[in-house]
Image (cartoon, rainbow, N blue to C red; front, side, top):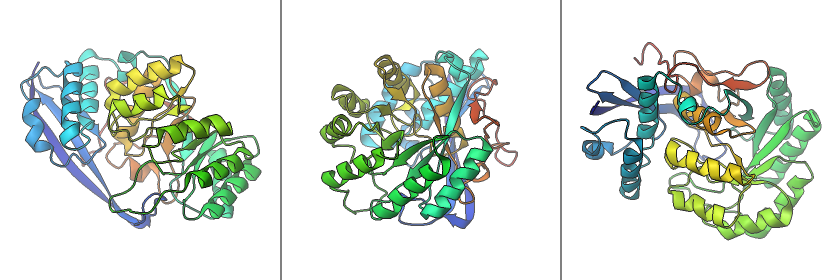
Length: 363
């Protein structure tokens, strides 16, 4: 079997009202999904999505004519491209999807089949008042969620802490609560300064009082020593690594024992193969592995298979913050949006590959 071409399709969903992501200074009035189709001479194709894939056309020739099942070869090629261009890891996800389809098995099974479902946490995306966030937490609990993540805007710390406090008071010990500072990276053109390390330390000590399950990306991702010190000094679990551009970035966190929770996104960071290798190492040392999943339904499926295959958890991120961010918006390219069951679990699809079923207007 040989790859004949890699085809990209861009689809856009208009957002009215807009989605106001806490990490983006600009309201999002549309949501774009770039779908990657890896096609072969035997008629089997794989699908992936995540990055915009801008500029990929000039590198397509590095894959055409090659065996799609030679995953390690393709990963190494993508690692060379990453140095020069974008995050083209949706190609690897599509190759895993193709490999699973060819074998007649779900990708999670190919990765180890450790578990077949995962409890999820509702990953909220908007900064809201303490009262609004507490009310939304109660609604999430009624829907079956066992945990949620609250965003804190570094320029509105007091409001963010008040939201965490209100959520904890509302749900008691019936839900785990994560907190995200979103300081690991910036949107293009965002030149705002990160919080000083001492302010982050004080905030972390304050959040300890609310029994947060973890604090995510409290510092710029380059400050590995700062992550290690914060983890050692505060007793709060520290999470990070979601957008690591190379495996060496993650290995630096490992070497410094700087993280409790490793979060590389399968379609944005280092890809499924390298993330699985990392997961097996850190899980073996008693750390947690649960990747970032804020792309779309296809990206969520890729990370679900990855996490289930290696036995990660204890939760999987489920981007969800209605009415601004819903499964219908997130998964508009799928025939049916991904939803949790009554107990707050997301099941691994039994279909071969990633289990993707595209919407009729996408096929």
